[in-house]
Amino acid sequence: ITPSIGYCRHPGDGDDPAMLLRHADQAMYQAKQQGRNRVVAYREEFGVQASERLALVSQLRDALQAGQFALAFQLQFDQQRRPVGMEALLRWQHPERGLLTPDAFIAVCEDSGLIVPIGRWVLREAARHHRILVAHGWGHLRLAVNVSAAQFQQGLVDDVLAVLQEFQLPAGILELELTESVVMASPDHVIRDMATLRDAGVCIAIDDFGTGYSSLAYLKRLPLHRVKLDRSFVQDLGRDPDDEAICDAIIRMAQRLGLCTTAEGVETDLQWNWLAAHGCEELQGYLFARPAPFEDVLALLDRPGGT
Image 1 (cartoon, rainbow, N blue to C red):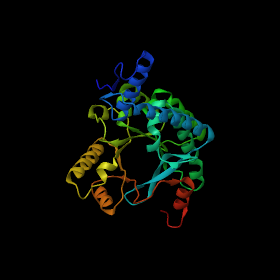
Image 2 (image 1 turned 135 degrees about the horizontal axis):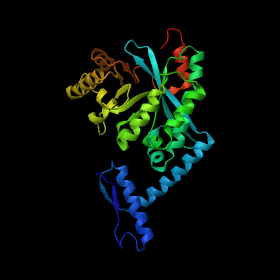
Image 3 (image 1 turned 120 degrees about the horizontal axis):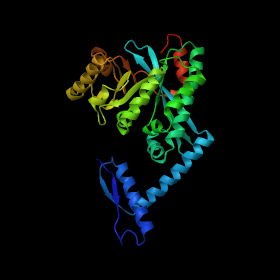
Image 4 (image 1 turned 45 degrees about the horizontal axis):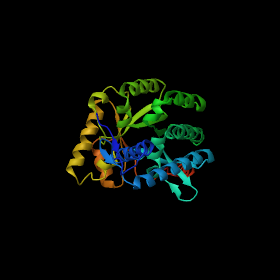
């Protein structure tokens, strides 16, 4: 058991039950924000942070209604630098703060439950672009979308099956990326849903592999197609023997399990050469292409000589 506990004291932190419960809840939220599995005492600044969080939740609801969300796409390549897919990445065009990446708001989306309707929008919006890719001769490229534990718990399978039918996506085109924490939240339920999606022609990848609570016992049961090497392991390849050992072990394990490997955060030729020499099949990072609006990605694909 790994609880997140927030607490406050009477009378210093409040003199009535409602206030004490509210302050304890604010402290518990801070415990979750700090990485879970810890105990946090209430402090007065938590009230300000809670108010800011409520305001952000309200802004996010308005953003979904007002169409302020957009997708950026980052291309993925094979060892010969040929495009094989693209990952859809959420962006928020905030009316005052400008273009925001998920780091600025995704945690609040998760905690508030807004990740479910926003994730549903991302799924449909990414799938919608497949028809454009087909028209330009790039219909074979995979479209990867990140999904959360909350989506699995609230109708993800039905949402995906509906999108597959609506946009007539061929088998192997849509890929769902989920982290280890998504699986561990409800392993048996998630594994069952993953098997249903796999049978429907959806590819499934484990994102940021090795950074969470990795369980080899569950890994062998997961109906996976791909394991993604986290950028934290990739960034020091060619310089750090420990990171090299970790990446080599993950690549070899994936090969023995019949899984493809994709490295994230590839930024240098040194990293690329190391990964290619050790059998990593696919690469994603600034060395090849940065996240960009779909129109810019399409222009890059269509230019003479390709990417």
